[in-house]
Image (tube, rainbow, N blue to C red; front, side, top):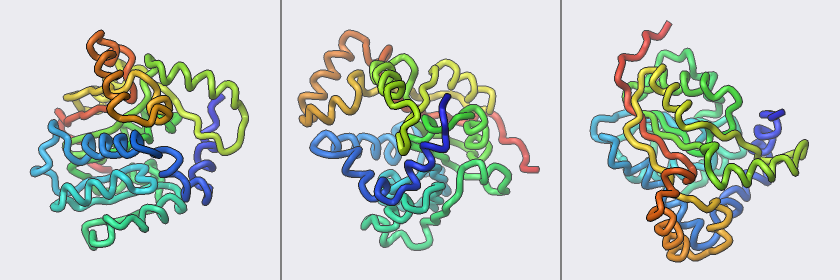
Length: 258
């Protein structure tokens, strides 16, 4: 059975937080991946950023997406949240946030603690977070309730080479402490939940067929991209790509805050 406490302990660990960036985004492909994620969240062609004045980041972690949003969308008031104090300590050290001033609010809090706050945001986004949430339907309801206009997020779809390989790895590490285990989800079910909470999916992008750790081992972005182009030619990205990046837009008015 999935134990969410292990994941929380993993990210609450001081050493994990301090080494998070170099362990996840090392080498030339790691730099490419960070730029790729920054483009999706901070410069997405499906989001009318000019109409957004406030943004909420859930699970901000060490702040790589926060830094991109602050830099690329200078008119936005951003609230960055995470439940891990060590991860937020890393966020506060990012040089790109030094001049953010009052445009950036940092809060150590889990997403569920925000559910009944009388505040809504034009844009709510969360990178590499949904995969750690046990009750993901309730989490999407909370995120949707906080957003007036847009939701941007990603997750590992159940139909992908990376997810199948990771499930084998998770079984081999069953019960291990400080193991960053994650859930995978069916894209159709996620789309259905979005519809139920008043959002329509306006963009779905599945960039990598090979698991990201494989690309990191290759260490050559041009070679990795050539492989992915070949997969795309045969339609495999659409069927087996991961993560699933989603942009959703509100189509029904939000429910009044009780």
